[in-house]
Image (cartoon, rainbow, N blue to C red):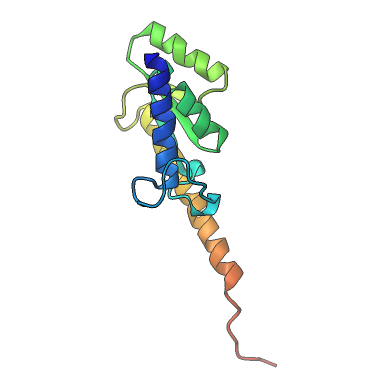
Length: 142
């Protein structure tokens, strides 16, 4: 029963985040929000977690275009095998030790994904702006 409550809570929190429930009074978790109006689109999310209770949230984020990263305690072979199984089952994108220091796999993967997301957002914004502006008149040279 406890696991179901935790799973429901994590899925609910993820949904609240991408819909903006915590920022807009008139929206609740069951409100339909068009993809382009969502506060944090799934494709801009990186979900980082460490346990079996996170599998439903991993699934929701990953299925909708977000990235997922599992962490495990250093030197814990049981936890390592568990996150490796999550990767083999295509439930997560990547995993590493719960060490966020610069130079670690965890640090490099997360910062790389943040850069990828930022570059994609900038490119999308550039295309959106270019699609609505007209060309400025130029001097004609004959």
